[in-house]
Length: 278
Image (cartoon, rainbow, N blue to C red; front, side, top):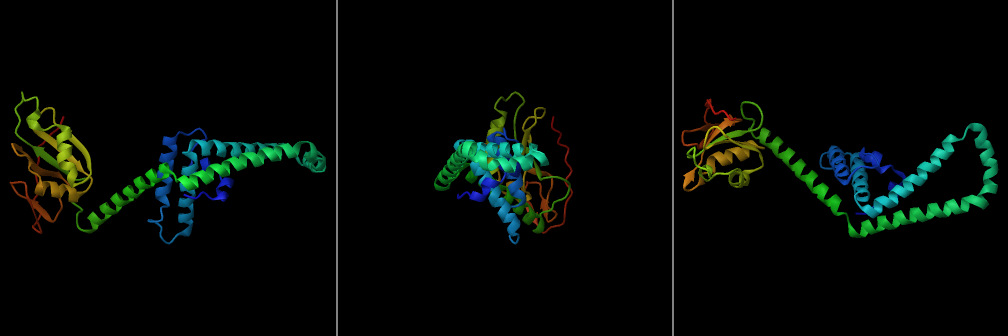
């Protein structure tokens, strides 16, 4: 990714809203939070949002690369020191300073200027390297943002398609299977096995296995559509089938029958549950 020279004039830490000693993890988190608010997919007709997203992306590129960050910090420190020296001068001393500048340049300014040119050149070389190599950190973070935006759009579409559900919160299902109290294998179902079985339908937010009632668990899906597919299609282990029923968030357009299947476009049936975990 190309890094604009204009970026050298910006305070990259302030742009991301992090302190100068921020870790890579803190920088990435700040980038995701800010980039999500101005992502071009969310603001296709706002050029300012696209420009800010571009600047944030470049800031992440520089600050998550060790060599580029060191070079940037040197330039930033030099500019900050120069600004502080100028700020400390009062109006009277400013006039004297202007009178003395011509004579002082010969003795001091050439050295300072040469140093400034050198450290700026170092940063530009690091930026050129990043331009040629690309930023793995930026690519990873942008993939995370794209996935988050995709999930947000999917949830919005689910609501628009009539998957609003009844009750509150995300969709939750109750799982039951045969298991004796003394069975250390829990009937063949561990948390890992249940996740493997259920995650093929969609994102699983939570999975709780009861430690009081053998052969019982509750799963919380991110979307109603994923929960519906699990209720309709999942049978579990062949030697110990799962019985899956709605606990919360069942779509209004579906009815659950005794065998655990759902049938759309039938009037809503209220499901009474008495399953208590922990």
